[in-house]
Length: 506
Image 1 (cartoon, rainbow, N blue to C red):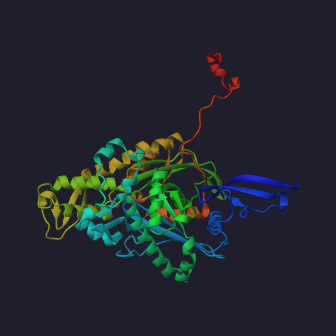
Image 2 (tube, rainbow, N blue to C red; image 1 turned 90 degrees about the vertical axis):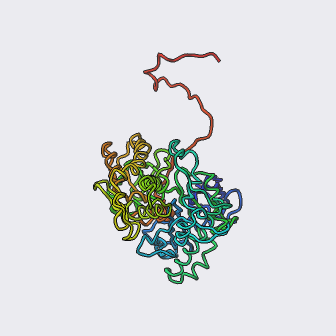
Image 3 (cartoon, rainbow, N blue to C red; image 1 turned 90 degrees about the horizontal axis):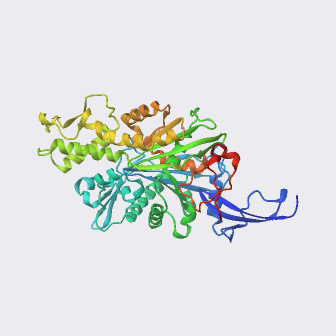
């Protein structure tokens, strides 16, 4: 075949469709990819270096050395209670390795060193501290601290009517916007990521200096977030100097937490249950949301997944358990010498970091250490700085969340005939939550599979893996645009209803 041909299509680069046009020779003389022609109607490039880097990364699989230009990709998972960052350095001739940023300032490397608190404190309207360095401010002056601020961005479609009436979102400090809070935390995360990169990668400072202008930043977001929420994060990222305004559309990308998590969970050789045509779900139980996405495996070598229905997202998660436990403590200690907001906050903090991941609902009582050996009150169950909480005190707090998961998530799994459910996220660490979901799913003949070590923040690491491997080859549309049509009647398809046919005059 000879001659010339004009082709118009879309080039998908890091989940963004770009209209492309190629005009030139057809047949064996045609180039493999029309990189040098036009994109978005303009001669390609202007942003050739950025787009070329991203195209090469998106088509790269880690079973062979990387062949593209030198570049860095960074992913951020800014959660309700904790945040995490991961990165990959793409060096020509080498296999890129995903690394999770650790050793955050003010934190012990042996105490969940890959996660850092999503907290930002202010003083007189000016930034004071971020993450672990702001924890003291939260205890002493909470009104000037932004925490659980992710809830301010949740759209109304994620809210349960009953929950929205009873759950109070902590207000932001006076004069501080949600965009500014995100920008301040993003800047902090990026600064420490640079510091960690330069110390852990050979010739790190020189590499960072060369690649800084073309770093791709990927932000993980809940399934229920859309254009409005992404616009806030985009402005915050520009304000934090993660990307420049003129290159933000190329260098700043978004991925849902569920899609990131499925890449994290399946990037292991022991997943022998994943076979062609198997339908399974990812249930991501986080701090303030529970995301559910259902996939069908369309190929295994390479692994290819297709969403079978629009993903789900509800406002539920770990912080709602914390708030219920706080109410239990407030009722239990009301009118006593321990009825103090600071004391109760310290109890909830210990519950969050220790007891929450240990509670299994098996024992009658659980101890919560909060004070010194001089703190005693047998009538309240307090002995040497430890308060005793019964199983009846704690179970309702956990049931509040597991009930929502069962009602909203399991229903869609049954409808789509899912065979497996992969559980990921911070709340997946809870043995009580795991057992409650296992019991519910087993009754529906659905097998629950742990999704790996969630302490490393699966969304951050999974987002980098998704950038490299892209297991998901098709997504389900959440909305469609267009009008209804009346297809031509075909009697062969409607024999059983032929008696209902009517002929209407024009």
